[in-house]
Length: 158
Ligand code: SF4
Image (cartoon, rainbow, N blue to C red; front, side, top):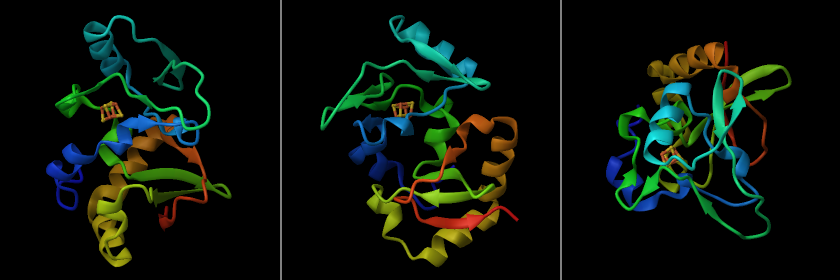
């Protein structure tokens, strides 16, 4: 979905968005029922917790600088390919609630996107991606996260 501004090569070389520590474990994606089933078939030990109309991974408790990887991450990247969760398809963009309004924000950890001019990111979102994100969130409100100040706001919902 972001191929116009984020090259698959950059993602393949980075993978930071598939690795979590105690400060960003809340960033783990919400899996649809279909995607969770694909993952369960490949990795039967994977456990999920219901989250709205989807599922999040059940993980062990982590603390400090301990790191865990999403179980779908392989040496060749995400094993889910085009079936990866919507959260992952739009990352580093996030949808968050701020004072009762929904907004699209950006994760600063993705240097490839974060270092782009703000105008370029906003223009890209306005070309259709923002509508896609808001529409998906209408159906799947569990992807809307509480605002986190580490995520600059790019645009509010009209
Ligand atoms: S589902 Fe795939 S893209 Fe999403 S966090 Fe896991 S490995 Fe990364």
